[in-house]
Length: 130
Image 1 (cartoon, rainbow, N blue to C red):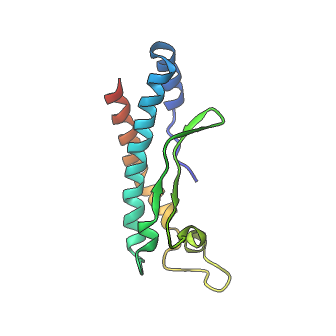
Image 2: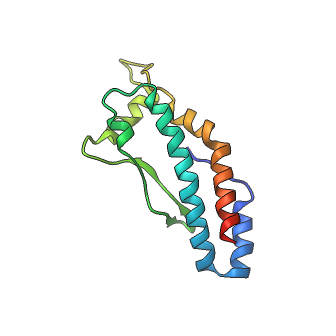
């Protein structure tokens, strides 16, 4: 699953030619972080609808930006003492014995609901950076 912002890579490549790679990387990192915060806010709203102990909410983590195959990325994952990352996929997809858990599709809904806010946050961060 991922959110794709069309035209952003071309824009960043053009800016990189004009301003330099390091400056563009700093700005794109800020944009990634702003977009990730918007997505996590929506993800928390979706997870709050079926929370029990709140461990899944508390363990949502945003990584630092990194480069993978030449593309800057940021990872949103679950990390913490309760090791909720082990069961997140069960909530999202269900199991043979419980095909429709209360949290089914929460991540997909969050991605869909946060798409516009994510794009707006990325655009605003890029605008402020240049």
